Image (tube, rainbow, N blue to C red):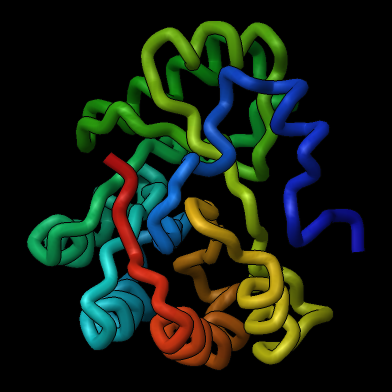
Length: 204
């Protein structure tokens, strides 16, 4: 495993211009879903959230929004927030500043948001300096690991419920690859955290 479920404090300190979590005395969590929308899974995610009165933030790929407009509209109609996740799900470290910004602007033409999350969490220094002038760049405090095919739903469930604190930003994925683990973990996570008194907020 080449990642950590819990983002180290040192990393948050080193990149203070990125948003990793929210200071909160209130017992609330910010659930986020990357890479959608999808015709297969977005509505299911929305149903799970609605069961617990939960609001979330969906970091959407512009190309997927163009192909799944009904699902994207449903996200907004249910009162959730959306953020830019590039048009083609690009890894910033593999792109020049100009090509990366062009792809982000292309996504912005499909839908507007002042929230941005870099796919794979990867940005060059120049990209970061430019983007933080125009966007709230949202990273994460807790990684569910639902994208990892070496894990199962129980692994993802425990990764989240053991690491969440007040104001945590948690990452899930609205994708075919993540679906087996997401479907097993998300209902249990929502129930567990609700039973512990957490509420679920969208990022505004």
